[in-house]
Length: 302
Image 1 (cartoon, rainbow, N blue to C red):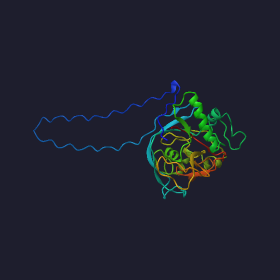
Image 2 (cartoon, rainbow, N blue to C red):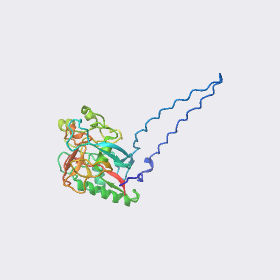
Image 3 (spheres, rainbow, N blue to C red):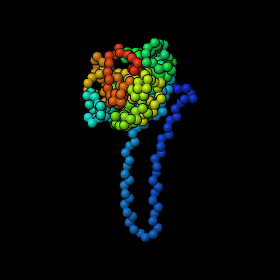
């Protein structure tokens, strides 16, 4: 379904400024030569520069404090090349085109945001849970995440935050990887060197290996090139798609109509670097929940 530019309202103090459109530089006309009369040499054609890759604009903030980053339409190679170290057998590359821009949460949904909609604490009394309302909402299964999206949609429609047809949902697997890569083609959105992963993600070496065995508060690591946080590590994130062993390509692909497992992306705090790669795919039954699973939301239109 096509996503359009969001009309969600923001507090007056947080209104976005529309970026000024850069003016084209006008080449100054060459001055006539006053000396000898001669036929001027033909001007050399100026090489045109390739069009710049679209960049997301500033995020909008919704009624419960989720910052939604606008993601531009575009094409990319989904999955991993055969040369990529530690790739899975279900990551065969396909060309994917995201035909419409969309908005996606800058971070996964936090405990405070969950409580603001669901009025519950599924993580309460469970093991491996961080303190603080800005920690990820964990112990959330796929059905719970879907319910959150529906209730938030109803809540914001009633409050006048959404235009007709706008609604929240989970990202498709293609939308998730496209946003994670942010125009990159390397195993991670920051490059190829997994030794830099600690700067960008919570994973085995800086959590379990350090006795910090829980999903950490969101937004504490470096963002990807499009400003999204925690796309690598911290919690695995539910996607809308049913899992299949091959990726679907083409325009705005979605998973099969039915299945036994839903897709999870991004890796988690207890996993090694290979499981935190942009192309890594995981799956589980939609009723599964634990301390390393969460989700982020997309704002779309019908």
